[in-house]
Picture 1 (tube, rainbow, N blue to C red):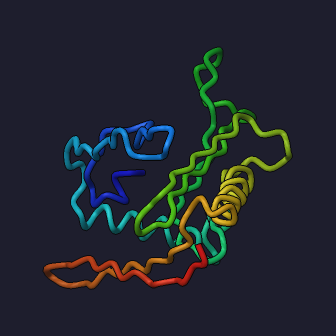
Picture 2 (picture 1 turned 60 degrees about the vertical axis):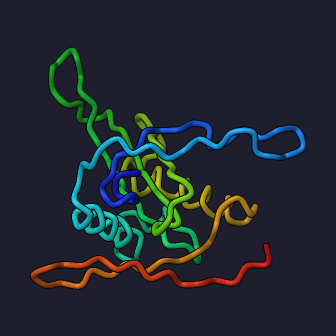
Length: 173
């Protein structure tokens, strides 16, 4: 998911972004390390736009979005391989959803996978996406994430250009 939000560049994962002293002064900041380009900028932006549209009305990931934040998400439902029959199991599925937000400058990537859900529902859109929407809303409500909205535009043409236009939202924090 980071590839889509970083213009097609694969980044080295960091678990820790910084280390601070007991007085909250910075001891060490870990830098962003680019590994390599895996997608063109245009392809990465197209995929990100599709993931954003999946969170809009009619999209499969609509329940992954939170109010007032542009969210990009992809749901998934997969049959699990049965090692005894060497086929896909008709009654064992993995329901999942991955989300990044705010989509224009992600602060969080959340992935939820539910192995063989028992609720009677089994699609990622109805099993995993609502949990992501709730987590996203809670992070914003707690002041741990930005609620900035971003609009993505693709201007068609022979030399396609990608433009990101941030929308400013006032915050009391």
